[in-house]
Length: 144
Image (cartoon, rainbow, N blue to C red; front, side, top):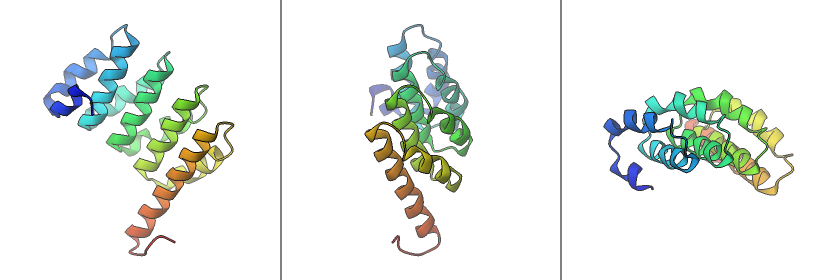
């Protein structure tokens, strides 16, 4: 957990969102990490916008932060990021979809099992396992 996120103060969210306008990509990435750590739903829309950042580390951090927040509004934008040019962004999106755990992501993650990158395929498989486990526990059955 980053120092900004360790504060955990939801009151800092507005200031952090404003800091996403920084011209320094590394600052944007650190701010996104903090927003993910805090987990406030007010950050969802700005993080979705950050999925289109020009820098892949920022897009990757945004996908991860959306997974930490777990808001279902991020499902469709994360699905689009599964086609990003950067494998790290695709991997983070697959992991985030698993954390959100919505069954609507199953088909998308199944397609990601065919990704050219081994790490993305592994993340997609893990995410599918998380969704299956969550569905089984909600039904009161042990996962198979």
